[in-house]
Every structure is written in C-alpha cells, then in structure tokens.
Image 1 (tube, helix red, strand yellow):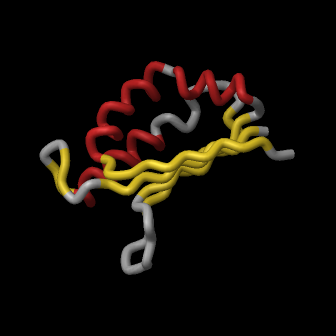
Image 2 (cartoon, rainbow, N blue to C red):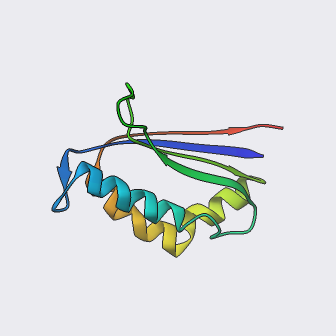
Length: 101
C-alpha cells in the first residue's frame, strides 16, 4: 500500500478570492477526485480547524493499493486539471509518499 499525504498553506489572496474562499474551492476540487481511479483505498481532504495553531491550511491524506494506482490517480485528467488552481493559490506545499503494510 502507498500512503500519499499532501499539505498546502494557501496565500491570503489569490485568483481573485480570499483564503477562506479558496480553501472551500480547493477542498471541493480534491473531494471530487476521491474515486477517480481504481485502487484508491482511502481519500480524505480536510481544512485545518479554526482557532488552532496549524502550519498548513489543507491536507490530503490518501492511500492506494500500489504505485500504479497512485500513478493512475495523479495522471487522471480531472486531477491534472486542478493543478493550475492549486499552484496559483498555494504559498507552500509539502508531499510525502511512503509504502506501508
């Protein structure tokens, strides 16, 4: 199994909208990808809870049966289509993929 975790810190203002608006849109775009490819075992996008000290605003925590399933997800046209928006609104991005039992 491959665990795929991505975290984003968003800009205060980008693409004509403020951070809260862009967080809602970013989460909706990610949520729409939850069943794009066979082999997705789990897929959760979450926005940081207000009032808590967090270094990132949005996280994707997902798991795939194998690298081929992760590759199919990453190369799916719907996933590729959200990358320009995410790139435009993000201040920082961190990603970690690792194998687990």
